[in-house]
Image (cartoon, rainbow, N blue to C red):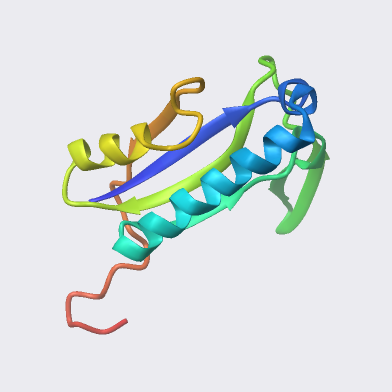
Length: 125
């Protein structure tokens, strides 16, 4: 079963952390990523740009139409996402809880109910 882990942050918080602390925490996260990638349980890990780099895209008359935003009502926004492939929700929770900073920031966990890239019933890709 696949699970999506979401990490929230805000630009003020990240800006308040001294660079030497961030370097240590990034190294811990890199080690966590490597460990779970090596076990085969971590399929993907992505850090996202800040809220000022995000945009909203719609279809307008068949063409992409982009606006500024999202306009967040909360200070926090999704800043990282991880995709796990594990045998159970319990295992996904164990992995999420072992993430660096999980004692300070919650890790949001969502089951992935549909895999658009799953093998076709006839065994084809």
